Each structure stands twice: as structure tokens, then as C-alpha cells.
Image 1: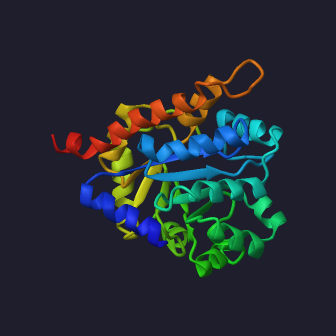
Image 2: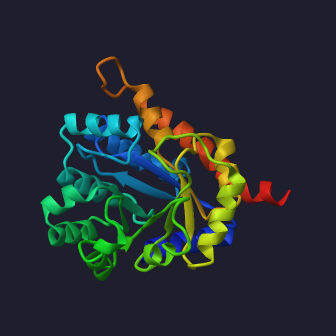
Length: 279
């Protein structure tokens, strides 16, 4: 776990509240608008930022995030530009943890050593690479850990107690619990089942457990945050961006504001999660 991530979760523990983890696609709909969104997220209440790496074959993503990736690619976003976006963000924010999320192919093509060196220099704290199972840890996970970059693994409702130790073995930063099977952006799961799943995972690790997939509203963020160490929101943010664009798909004067309004509302839910659970 990087120092930034460690400090973030320690501060949240002192406040007795979960993290709000916000995902958006780098370069959607263009570089400058995307960077403006990234810079605005912490002030709106985001505790950790997941920076999506656009990829042409996003097999685990739902239609909204697929569309965001295509908009970003159409706008000329590349892995080089995504790393640059992290550097530009870090120029004004040295505190907020940033996690890059995506697929292995662009990293492999770029070169693992080169990517990790540049990610570290850009201030990246962690990686989520959805198509690299534990059996492939030597490809990227172990080299990332050696550089001091957390490798955050996904657990799902189908990750049973026999599989969980392998999933958690080299995981660091936090565990991302995908609260349902299927693609991103699906319906919200039963919160009681989520709470039980978080407890089960915590029986195997001391890492924070953040829950995502399906959280769209303040009330949902509050309900999930009552049992989780973090609430991850992605599709709702991507949809807010998409809904703000003009007919040609370009950013408007409302784009950043639509995102920050949503994140502010979600942050209010997360901040009252433990109070609601205690009532």
C-alpha cells in the first residue's frame, strides 16, 4: 500500500466513514474536459480517484463505460496522454490517491517496465487490471508491487472461500468487491448480502474492502457504505458526463458541473453512512 493510500484510509478510519471512490474515463469526451473533471473530484467529495484507461475491447464494461472509452479514443486519448493527465493532476494535488483501471493489453504493448516507471513518476498509487488473474501475477502484479504501486484485485459473489486466498495473496491498497456478477452498470444488489460478503472477505484480509457496481444515488451510497470501507461509483459518473454533451458529443459548459453535483450528493450519502447504520 502506498503512503498516500495508507494515509487516506487512516484518515477515513479516524472520521469513522467509508471512502467515496470515483471512476471516470480518461479523455472522455476530450483531454481538457476530462482533466477539469479529475481536478474537481476531490473538492466535490471524492476520496480516491479511479482513472479509466480507454481500450478498444472492454469486455467487462457495460454499455455506458464502453461508450465513454470509444469517445475518449475518438478524441485521441492514449496511454501516454492518460499518464500525462495523472501528472497534470498531481501538479495541483499531492494528497488524493489515484488508481489506474483498465485492461492489460495497452500496458503490455506499451511495455510493463516503461509503464510502471512512468506511472510511478506520474504519482499513480495503484492499478486495477481486470483481465489479469492471480495466476498471471508475474506479468504485472509483482513488478508493480516491487515499484511500490498497489495492485488492487477484484472479488465477486462467485469468489468462494477456496478461491479467495489466491485472489488476496498479492493484493494491496484495498480489495474491490464487485457486488454482482455481470457487466458494469447493472442493478444494485441486496445490501444485506453485500454486508455479509464484506464480512466474509474481512475474515481473510486486513485490507479495506470497497464495494462497487450499481451504485448510482446518495441513498444507495449510504446503504453500501454502512458496511463497506469504500463505495465505488463509475457508471453513474460516466452517465452524467454523457448526459451533459451536445449533439455532436462535445463537452458543454455543464459537463464538469453535472459530475460535481452528482459526486457531492454521493459524498453526502457516504458521509452519513455510519450514522444511518447506527440508528
